[in-house]
Length: 469
Image (cartoon, rainbow, N blue to C red; front, side):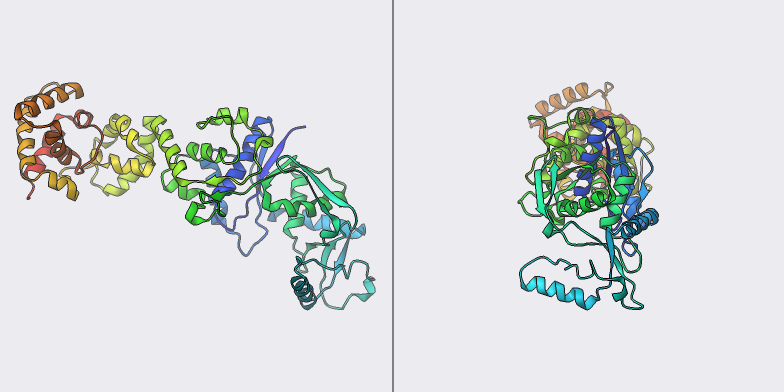
């Protein structure tokens, strides 16, 4: 059997981080088993589905590296297939027309509420004669669900789970306007797409018992089900925006690398010993949905950020440069040095050691790219007051006569100067940092000196010394 999994988001919003984990687990399992991974856009809710959300979902999937093996399928485009199945069941006596009015359904709902029970349709049109049908009222089509026995699932994650069939009502397949319900559409699509494994959140578990009624009525083989616990926040409560329950595009904008996000999501509910850093190749080799835990995993933004810092430190310098160049170009609005990109590439090794996100990396790197003169933050400006400017001017005179502009040689010059001036090295480096970066923090100064070069360094020092105090 070729394993076929699917991810089936609704385009009523962007790709939620919890949905991204579901997509990841489906993608990994199909890759692990040498199968196929498919994407179905469940856009039957025409009032709430948008093209913008569909594009965002596909972009988010692509950004994470979770590309499907075939073009995305629109559920709405398959609506006639859904209708055909409902009518087939009706013709075979496995479904029936129901003419209940909104008032009757409301009465059922109120009765169930007063008894402390969930709303269940009472089956009043299940066996009524067609001659009883009221004129001019379009019916819904309901399935004839099994009324005795149990419906059982051997769930890969949850284990053996069952429900009494008396708890399953005759749910609607086609609405009165002829449109299919989710419950019908998802089963027809999964069957027609050849889905062998349905891996989704455990909030769908109750739906599964209903959907099995459809599989049985149509005589179709059941897929294998795996219902994984939903994500919680770090405090153990249901995941919300305050915990980081955002769309995937928000994580891209916040400066997270896709491989860091995937690695973090992978470890939420699944693990491989004590391994924390797991590459995509390793994940495909090791992942099995049977190893997903039953307990709800906790999403922690701080842990994701820490993992992201690790991936930034290990990322290719050229790739990081290309990621931050557009951000810096936008920030500087035309005030970009012609040598900016070369400086970024040369300085990336030092820059990436200090950054937790791509946004932070671009902010820290901007000083390399600015045209002169630089603006100063308040702390940097204070470092150039009084004795700081005097030390900087004296050291600048030494730099002017320096020919070897390598970091080790410059460090030797700085240490010799501080010793002769009777001061600590920081008394020289702090005002120098302010002059060269406009800030009170930066990568190592000797590295910065070497990357900026002699001409740019002396020019920035002159600008700082001549600026009004």
